[in-house]
Image 1 (cartoon, rainbow, N blue to C red):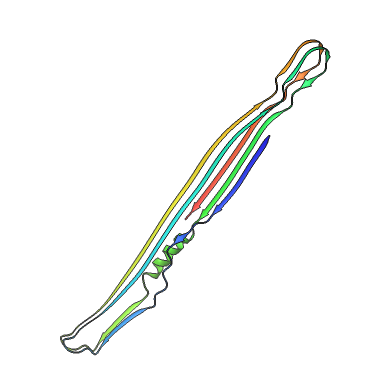
Image 2 (cartoon, one colour; image 1 turned 90 degrees about the horizontal axis):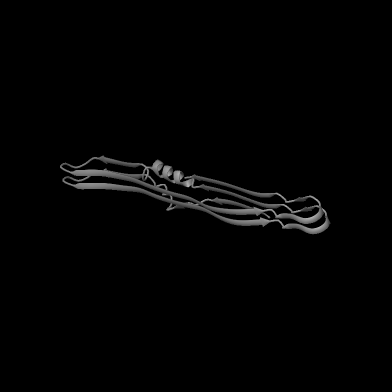
Length: 197
């Protein structure tokens, strides 16, 4: 009895709440304000990126195998020829490969950081009146959140039994050779997991 199990798993999981678009440059200008005037230009630029990657790879393999050759019995014969029992064998192979790549995590965070919020902000104040209060304010905020959760679980249970036959030779005048076959168990498992976020 030979049982071969081969599984190949390739998973790519990315969940991102968008890449902020490139915001055009903000500009403000105060020119020729009147006396005792209060003038204010405020520019608020924001960039928010949230990346959540949850990767779960699980392998569960249960195998119970049993192989037994026949029982050989030679008795009560005047002349008995050779008797042999066949081989008993168990073989099992499990090969699992999982590759998870969340390459966009770094790309999103790096892209948001490079944009630095919302582009260039410029402002000019010229020809203001006496006792006037003129103000240009630019606020830039860049928030990047990246959370990666990688879980790999392997549960494997293997139970194998191989028995050759029982050889019994008795009460014969002339008996030939009697042999029992080989018994063999073979189990091989290979697991390979790779996470890159």
